[in-house]
Each structure stands twice: as structure tokens, then as C-alpha cells.
Image (cartoon, rainbow, N blue to C red; front, side, top):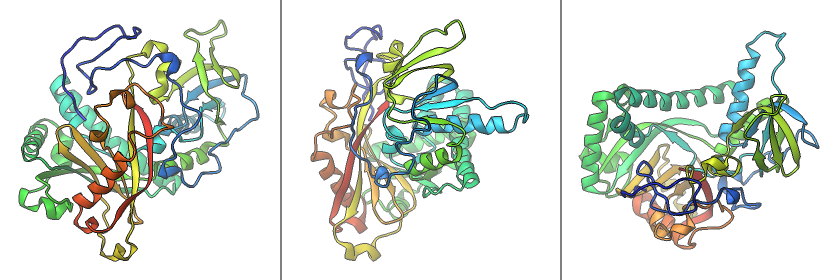
Length: 413
């Protein structure tokens, strides 16, 4: 969702209304750092329906007293960081001892944003357009290459480690239901193609007369196709962790309360957790929406926001054969301010998230909050997701679409 406004910014540490013209969030009161910690319980995402043996794993009964590297957060960023540290170490001299790595997770493995997202990654033209306007051609090309490297890197690691996570290299459609927005997006692609090589090489604009037939979305006014990948994020993270579990110290259910701002005389940072204290030579914060809780200087700079996501299935099972098997992912824009994301699964169900219009005016329910233990304005989002599937896709029109699982999650802006 994009909400435009023009105001000023207050000091991040003050508990007053703050806005930032470089974000897409409306004016809001910052969440105090002291309240920016994970809730003990959470809604259960579809991705976590079959738990991995490492889900609540602790490598040792108690925390180590010291570690070379402490990583706070066991989602995709935290686990991937540990993996690459150990991979790079394996290429060094056999006489060089590997660093000790400790991963601290407040709840379970991959229980935060990674385990709650839409299950796809893609080339974002919205991000590229913003960077091109603000920072120029070189920065836009650098970002585009970065997007593509992430897709390639994940594809490589899935193959190398033989991760069973329903990984699929595919395409993603950005679909526009509003005629004016569709024409604007065509112009945006033309501009990006002039300046960004990846867009020239990788992005396709669907001809107007072919949009419905190609995308399968009823009433679509325009669309473009970008490189993407679809996956089961929880299985990816747990599979990757399995490859390094004998070389790291994983400590789940270990909330970090604070990290010292300075090193001690021995060169260590002090990390205070719910289970005791440990000292680390280096600290990696892979804590997303919860970062300000352990880095209070970022209060009001990193803003937690709450979103909702769902799994939608069909009530009428007799329609299975008539349903199209879709392998593309989708971002469908109803208008400039409302976008839903859809990831069709191999079993015929779908992941659909968004539904901002059902709760966007109730600011306190989704901005500056980290409570993923509650839903947002249910049952309106569930009804919205069911209606969207039957409205967007002809083969879902009389399928009896039903939300079989709905959950919330916190991410940061």
C-alpha cells in the first residue's frame, strides 16, 4: 500500500507522532523500544503445519559462555548468514579453525517473518523505479543485479544442498486492474528499459488484448512479467539449518533482552538473554521488526508493521480437474494503494495475502505493532481473500473458496 503525505520528522527517541517522506507509512506513534519484542505465542502459519525436528532445538542444554559470532534471529537472514560464514571458512586453510557461531532465537526456528510470508521472491520494479528517481542509473542497475543474484544464489544452494522446499524458478505477473494505473506501469517499464539492463533483458509487458488470456485474471487492464521463484520458506530454512547444525550452536526459545553498546576490555559484546548471558566477538542482528528492542537507537527508525496472509482451498473437491495448474506467482493491484500477492501451490490451493482495505484505517491494529498472536479484524480478511480468488480467476468462480488457515506476521519498514 502506498500512502502519500508531506510532513516533518521528529527525533526517533521521542514518543510523538512521526512521519518520514521516504517511507510509505501514514503518520503514527512509534512503538517504544522496550515493547519491541516477540510475543510468547503467535498465530500459526500454513508453512509451519508440519514441524521440523530442529524447530525447538537447542544444541546444548545451557548457553555457551563465549562465541566468536552471535546471530540474533533464526529466519532466512540469520540462518543464511551462518551458512555462508561456514561455507567461506571451509575454503580456507585446514589449519585455520572455524569460528564458533551461536544462533539465538526468541521462539522457534523460522517462526518470524520468513515463516509467515507469501513464499515467493521476485524482481521488484517498484523498488527499481524509486531508486532510479532518487539515486540515479548506477544505483538502479546495482539494485536490479542484486535482485537477480538473490534468485540465482537461492537456486544454487537449493540444488547444492538438495533442499526439499518445493523450489521453482518461474515468472511473476504484476497485474493491474485499474486502466489508468496499467498505462502508467507501461510507461514505467519503458523508462526502466532505457536505463536498467536487467529490465531490458528480463521484463515483459503483456499486450493489452492478451492480458486476461495470459494471466488468467478476469478484468485485468494490464500486466507485466518478471523473473521470480516460488518456495516453501519454512522448509528452505530448516533444510539449510540441517546442513550446518553440527557446526553451529542453535538456541531456540532464547529471547535476547539487550546487547552492550561497547566491547569489554577483552573485546567482547555482552548479550543478555532470558536464559543467561554470553559474550560475543561479533554480533549479527537478523531480527527484522524486533530490532529496536535490542538496538534502542533505532526506535522510530525501524517501524514494525503487521500484515495478514492466508491459505485458500476449495470446498467443492469435484472441481479439481477443471482448475488450471498455475505455476506463476502474482501481485494484483486493485488500484494504486492496494495490492494482493498470490502464490499458487502445487496441490491446487493458494497462498494469498494483503487485504489492507479491510483494516487500513484502523492504524493501531497494524502500524507500530509486533503482536502476531492475534488476527486483524477477522472475519473481514478471510471473506476478502475468498472473494478475491473467486473474482480474479474464472476457474475459481464457483469453487466455494474457503480460507483454511489465516495468520498474521510482523515486518519492518
